[in-house]
Image (cartoon, rainbow, N blue to C red; front, side, top):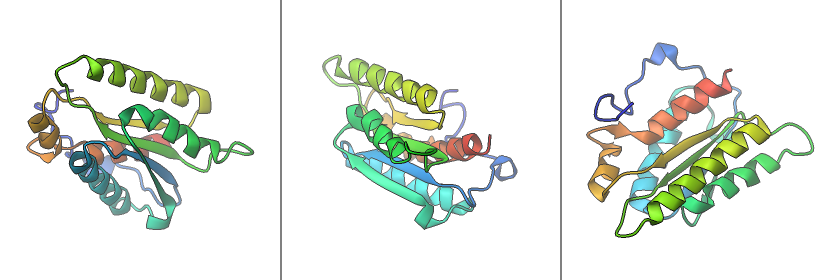
Length: 163
C-alpha cells in the first residue's frame, strides 16, 4: 500500500506480537546515512518497545544497498551448523532515483537477493529498502510525513518471527 495512503508507523499495538525471547539481526546500508540512521533508530526502538532485549539485536553495516543481501546471508550463516540464531533479519537501506538507471538495477538485485534468502533459509528476511524518486520522498519515509519504514520493518519482523 502506498505510504501516502497509510502511515508507515501506524500499527495497532494489540496486533503486534511480543519480541520477548526473540533474536533479530539488522543489516544497514551506510550509503544515505542520514536516512538509514533514522530507519535504524526507529526499527530498534520498535523492537525494544515490543519486548525485545537490546542484547538480542545484532547489527552490521554494509557500504551500500547492493551489499544488503550478502550482509543478511552472513548473519544467517552464523547458525549454519544448527538452526539460524535469528528469528528474523531486517535489511535497511535507501536507493534514491538519480540521473541514471542505477536505482532500477540495485533495487531489482536487492529484491531478488532478499527473496532468495527467504526461500533458501526459511528465516524471514525483511525488506526495509526505501526506493524513493527523490531525497524529499526518502525523508518523508524515514520519520517525515509518511512515518518511518524502520517501524514497519520491525513490526513485519515481529509478525513473521511469531509465525
